[in-house]
Image (tube, rainbow, N blue to C red; front, side):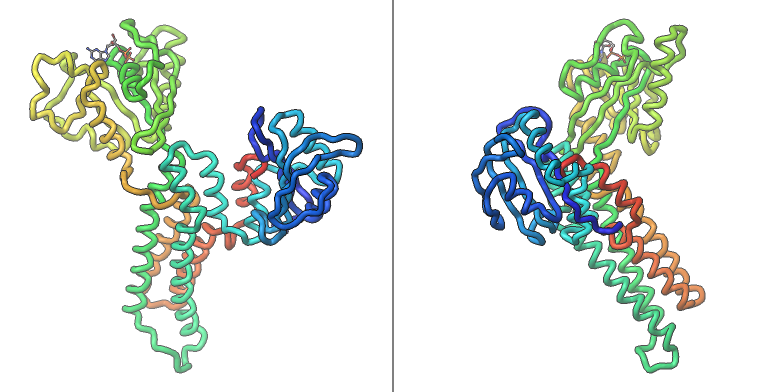
Length: 442
Ligand code: GDP
């Protein structure tokens, strides 16, 4: 992707009305454009009050702010026009800016330029989008850590160490007869193993980071009338689903967003998964099946008062993506006895057991409720996984045949995978995809 430096502009504040609205301009000629529109001489980082004019009229009054490249967000000359935050004023201003030669920026184009001008790496740029869309305080904190480079530094450090080993192996490959440090295969294998373990630990943290960025979807399934909607409400702590005594009322899929210990959760209530004559209900059932298939976790609700509990079954919660929940514990004459310890028993009506259910959900999806160190993306996790695979193969190669070429190639591949995370070797197509997810003006 070649670096474009043409003048781009966008309204950087959200649509609608607000005290202040900001137009952001970046690229060659930004300074001249700002000086013309505001009729001021611009100085780096100095805010000046002015009238914004087009050819004929005063459009607005406000502040013009200038950042001289490379000391700006994008690394180019950047001008911000802070006017009044109304849609008409902002559009007038943007039009005036465009009639002076700027074009409207694509979503994420400012961040893309910051990346292309080496102001940040790809993981940091992605974290900006994550920060903007973060759904919990924890997610926002984690995104800030990635932006500040905590994650990138780790990736960079490991990549450098792999490169170091690779140079060493390739030197032995290219100059086998020279007097270079003799290769100790055992030591080499141990070094690769250590690096692999470091990537594994980073991968584990990244899983947490990904969960906190994307959240998880949890689907409630079960026969009609077992209390799915009531449980949905109890978890969401709001009266959103319609709760009735008539089986099959929850005909469509209901969703609500909530957080458990900072983990964003999309909770989905489905219609009863059962055979039905009614057309509407059949559609609902089909949809519920699809939802359950795609969810990260399925909560299968059963009615405890139906006597449907199998005390001896200790395996029901061992399935990877499913928890079995027994509801209506308040209807039991006695407290659930100790032999039911491994079961999840709740009462959506009284709220008993709901907190334990929340913990069970976090446990099941592997969310560690400690300080999340950074956010990550699915593509980072994929790259780390591939790097781990290839290093593992390389370790085995050392066992089997000590083939230097294969070892060097393995190290090269691992290095390339990690490089992709930071955007060192990213293809145009990937970059296009990543930045297209951003909002306009960022
Ligand atoms: P769904 O069809 O699975 O969504 O079930 P609902 O949430 O609509 O509940 C069906 C009926 O069971 C309603 O009358 C609820 O009040 C009742 N119910 C739900 N949860 C409980 C509970 O924990 N205890 C008792 N006693 N009744 C409940």
